[in-house]
Each structure stands twice: as structure tokens, then as C-alpha cells.
Length: 222
Image 1 (cartoon, one colour):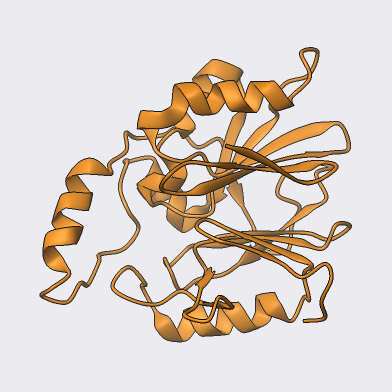
Image 2 (cartoon, helix red, strand yellow; image 1 turned 30 degrees about the horizontal axis):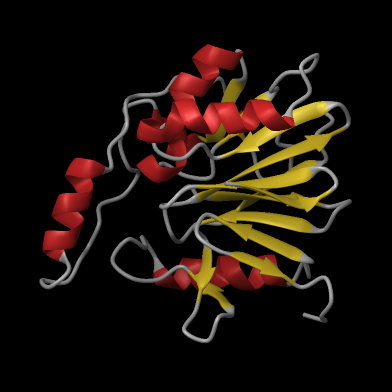
């Protein structure tokens, strides 16, 4: 399902996660790709948004969980777009793996075992390494922010001119519907996740676009 967030930014959702497509300075950028199983219909949705004379320029991956990079190899092959991620996450993505071990409680282990079978990914060629503080892609206006915690090399992207934060899984929806740091069995370091969260929210974004949630503060004050 496509949702238009602004004149130049879209959310494309499936039952598991959210991905984001944006246009900036003549470039089309995709942030995360979702699972491989949905990539054909997902790419059809992407092509509905991008004008026929234009093409996808880059695929930015926040971290190496299959529901975020699983379709990257397919989309790269179909569109010619280059794939980018952080150095730590790239090492895992190129192997089709996660960058950290999960630590579920005993009662969570059956769920994670089933998930490991159903949610998997093939190795993905990564064309470039993202560096903290740099532009994620030339002329994109998107800046890379190191946000370790959910995974050791997790990165987020801040679109400064639009005040939109693309947070991947570094931020999630809390019990009362408000943004909170990544936590739980799939979080590599809760302490670093909280630090990353505080640094991100200090930017005072008007939209926080996460892998599994969306927070809109355009009519409120953070």
C-alpha cells in the first residue's frame, strides 16, 4: 500500500514492514526494501510513483535484518540502482545474514525459530559504504547518522530540508503510541539504542519514518 507523506516522500507498506521512497534534487531514493517474497508487487508499486522517464538511483539499507534488505538484490538487478549500507551491516548483508545474534527469552524462542525459517534473505551485493555525517548519496540531501543499538551498525537518515528522520528499527512505537528506543530480544545493545534515540529526537524531526511505525509531529511540538 502506497501512502503519500509529503509532495516528494512516500511510504510503501506490507504486512511486515514499511519502506520509503523519496525524490530529492532529481534523484529517486529507496530506503529499505522489505522481504524478498514481496519484491515483484513491491517494485510495481515503486514504478507507479516514479515517472517513466526517470529511474531509481539508490537503495539505502538501515540494517541487516531480512525484512529490511531481503529484496535489495532483486531490485538492484531490475533497476540498476546501487545499494548502500554501513560497514558493519554490509559485512552481514553480503552474506545474507544478520549482524548480531538474537537473545530471546525461553518463551520467545519458538516465535524466533519460526521467524528464522520464514524470514530469510539471499546475499546482496553492496556497492558503497555509508559514513556518519556524510550525504548518503550525492545531492540527495539525506545525511547518514550512526544509530547503533538495534544492531551494531544500524544507520538512520535525516532529510534536513524536510525535517524527516528515516529511523529503520532504531525507533519503535511504545505502549502509549509514542516513539521509544529499540528494545527486546532483537536489540543488540539497549544502552546504545537509548543513546541513539536521544540523539535522533534532539534533531526535532517533524516526521519519524520507522520500519514498523510512523510518527507525524507536523501539527505538534516535540
